[in-house]
View (spheres, rainbow, N blue to C red):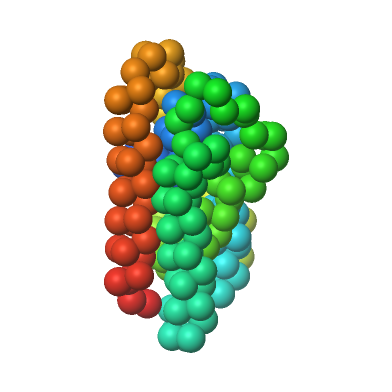
Length: 204
């Protein structure tokens, strides 16, 4: 059974703005509600490999292997820098521009999934988050972690979707000001670059 303590903890963790929230907001502002929902879905799916790793114990291997951690981290840094460039580049995937055509939903979801898949800290995070809420019965530990993971993913999608829908609601206002669009694009690029720098400084 999922405890209230876990639900509250997961809610607070998901609610805190991070890379996935930033991506969903950017898509909501730049391409509207549908794009934001696809972004939320992709970010939620990107959690799945880390939950599986935590459940199967692979996160401990990632934590103990400096090479594996550094390889995944390097890929994540490069990808975040790529997203920063996409916010500045004319016609880029994250650029807020009234003339830009919306991307296909699966492509948006794929980019969102990669944001989380290429963050090696997530596996270690789930390895630390889930065990304290287990009942203590070895026979049901895997099922319990899977259930908590499913709840965490559902919360992620719901909260990210709300963020994205809110951004989409303000889209008309943002698109009405060239100065504001330019400021938003530079801001998204700067934050993604900052997140890349923070990830680069992380240690296993």
